[in-house]
Length: 205
Image (cartoon, rainbow, N blue to C red; front, side, top):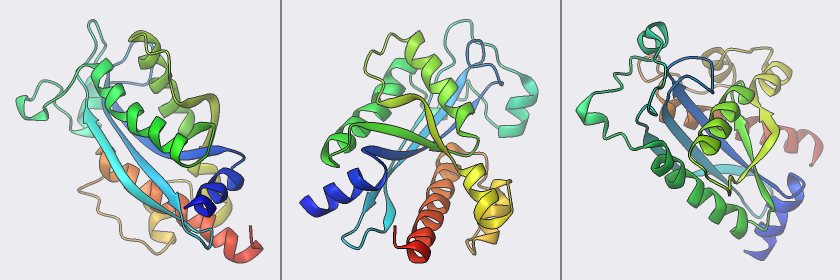
């Protein structure tokens, strides 16, 4: 276990990659609602290969006064007020995600989580805005650095669309499941692991 801890801390300069995907009511993190958030934790084996482990996900209630863009809702298929969403207030939702992320950072011997995402700056902007809005002081994610899987996918597979990249990587893609935070996060996590592990095979890193 000590070896695995050291491997994760050494591999990414004491950053723990955590894959995140969100669904929103628009593109402006200050004014538009955060509606879903999912995070996938990653681990490393004794050989230095990374793989996904736990998935944490939560439906989020639009914050008071939040904007909900109709085109965005139609794109994601989310009904923010559906009773079966079991949505939680932003503060509770972020606590539900941040708590296991902080625990994983500590247990991996890392100093900070770094957000891995498809167009990661978008996801991080909403996470940071929600953390600030709800007064959360201990945001576990680096405030501006990310690992963007769009960039990595362009380099590794010549693709920049998640569905096409996943298929190019030889993995399955279910279009009916897409645009739910859980599905997109898991696929992004598999993709990130595949690229990092392939790089290890090529270079020994």
